[in-house]
Image 1 (cartoon, rainbow, N blue to C red):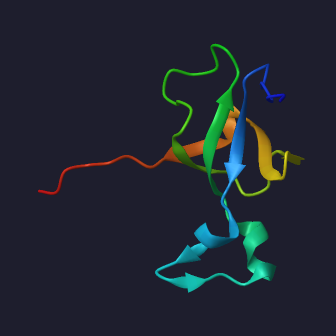
Image 2: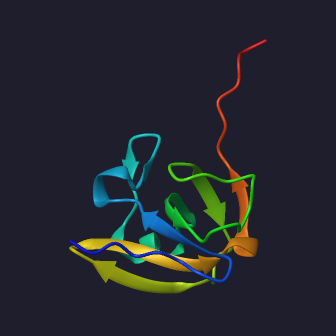
Length: 93
């Protein structure tokens, strides 16, 4: 088994599966799925950032990166600087 290890301040983003590509229970049509800009960090290059960690769910710039497929899973290899936000858990007030 081989893993993909990003280098030079890149992040490997695992793209959402078909089942996860919905909003409010509505499945997004295949034609609109290419514009989804959310995923989960699968790997980071060494020393790229202290703000992100493997497993974080993030939002990235729409036209960023290189799509790749490895062992049947779709990924996006993007510069860390193209990640613009991450989802965080907060307590309700």
